[in-house]
Length: 481
Ligand SMILES: *Cc1c(COP(=O)(O)O)cnc(C)c1O
Image (tube, rainbow, N blue to C red; front, side, top):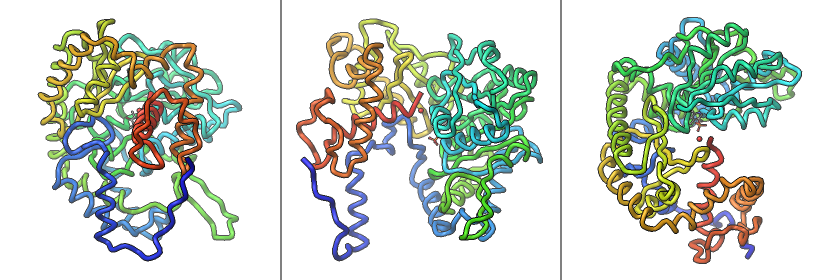
């Protein structure tokens, strides 16, 4: 089944040909501009899109590797960090860096706290709901993750966090809000604990950082979550989520330079010259910095408050609509626009409902512990509320009449991996999926091990179903997002 490699074309194709090619590749992607996907894309329409692409292109060639050379980029970065710091309760002492995304911001925070504390066996303490980027950071940087229990509303149990603190603790972590159920951890209580035990407290506001401040201004009741809480020493926040910047824009902010200085990498003996770098990448495009600067200045406070108002209002319609469907309920008390919904009825398998929604053209994320479906709402979903709720209501009734659908497709797979004896196999299976996804001829993994029927391969090298399965599984395991 091995396929020969594709070679670089002998003679080049025209610009219009390759651009057509790019368009064609999109054919099977989720239709994000139709409001049918509830994650991954933050899109507000053509005008917004044009601003982002113009701003990005204007600085595409500039290199963020060397901020001394490109003073334009450093100036924009500084302004972005200042605006963000003042939105998030910071002051003149607040410092930070831009990064390529939430994951990089989190990697940097964990590295910073590790190098600051120099513990023999460094540990961070994080809620069970913490974003998986912290697991990744721990894995990369040799830090142990201690997971703290959640209460019945999915907020971290602060007493459990307390019991886990020891001399190896480099930091404790909370989220504002966490990704799986969209609830804000008790940051004030964590702050008190952090001060009492003299440990740093990181707040992961990747998804909330550029929405919560505007909800607060609009009068929505939001528990304290940012630098206004004594004890908070750093915050991660993604501009490429509710800041609506082009992808590749996040920030990591620290209370003061005594933390940030541990993030820097300096090597003075390289034959290429003395080298200093603040974040993970070397070369990076100035485009995402310019895009973020442009969008923040374009919307301004009024623009973001308006977006926040629309986002919050449409989220309430989704939540009320879902709670009104027999056998469904929204989990916990989501604080903003991210939430999860589950089945309250054993005869209605929530994953089968998700599969039925997929068949109806919606792109739905499945979550585990507990089994539920997930949604992240933006103003693009204003047009999808009614059709979504109608399809969801019908899907639930359909699954109630056809409980056997819980035994097929993705529902069966997710149901199976939730069962303890099979769990140990999940890692091995995902490893195979990854090897297949990254082997150039698609032959690396044992395809027949997958319980999916993928006989009608759309592409000669890679089954479309396999791709779908893989991506869903990967996005699934990239989460706890
Ligand atoms: C999205 C998200 C992240 C990770 O951000 P990426 O930009 O996807 O790397 C981290 N934490 C939370 C709560 C998130 O929602």
